[in-house]
Amino acid sequence: MRTALIIAAGAALGLGLAGCGEKPAVTVYKQGQYQGKPDMRPWDNASFKGDKSAWEQQIKRRNDGQNEYARATPSAN
Amino acid sequence: MARMKFLCDAERCIECNGCVTACKQEHEIPWGVNRRRVVTLNDGVPGEKSISVACMHCSDAPCMAVCPVDCFYKTSEGVVLHDKDLCIGCGYCFYACPFGAPQFPQDGAFGLRGKMDKCTFCAGGPEPDFSAAEFRKYGRNRLAEGKLPACAEMCSTKALLGGDADVISDIYRNRVLKRGKGSEVWGWGTAYGKPEPKPAAQPGATKS
Image (cartoon, rainbow over all chains, first blue to last red; front, side):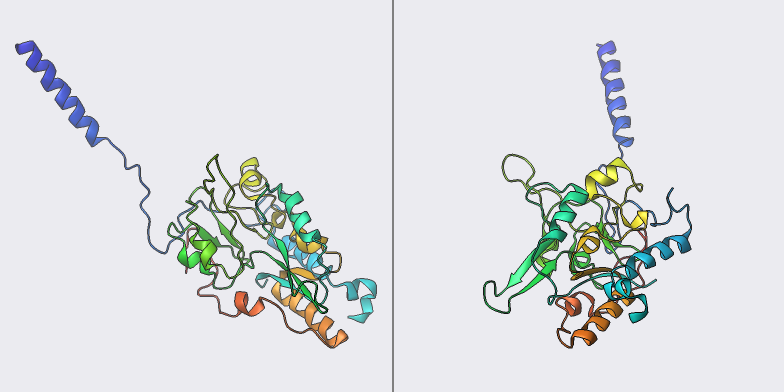
């Protein structure tokens, strides 16, 4: 009888303590705040190695490439 | 650098769907998802106009405002992106978007709606640049390669312009002056008519 009581008390204690160690499984949302993972800036990678101006220069070149007036006759625009 | 924007010149669009194909091919978009599509107004009637439509990356994006799990963010270049790991596929953004941009892939055998998918301005998403996870979830990250969206760069008539707002506005202005008509830009006022609610911020900062 006494052994059974000790086993029961031990089990209850074990289960009780296990409950204390439970981590919240639900994300706590903060209203109005982006909740996701952080993103990298487009120049922070192996291609540009953090050189923002090089990236901007490349994008500018591509931007200007959309103007076919300037592409056909560079002096026209 | 100014904000990244799209501009579609209805006077030039010939409904070739080259932009749609370029997008599909670039990002390996599955069946049933159309990040970009071409809409024709008054189809078959003389004077019909076609417009290429996708996420316009609005200044004051309504999708960001309605998202119940706040999975949207705006990059410092003004590109509206979202975290698919957070998205619950509720569809609120679809109802809020004036352009019908959010797409929901069929996920499973019972027509279950998957996580939202939309145009990323070819800027990937919140995963390491050029990683397999980024490509699988968001598609190719052309912006990090120093390139502009595939749809705009592939447009054969240059009806669809994408890039720095100042530059593409100048290109369009010059075009209108030369041809003397067609100064109306469909969707520009809807997407960019409102001021940015706050300076665009990288993830982790507050959203509007």
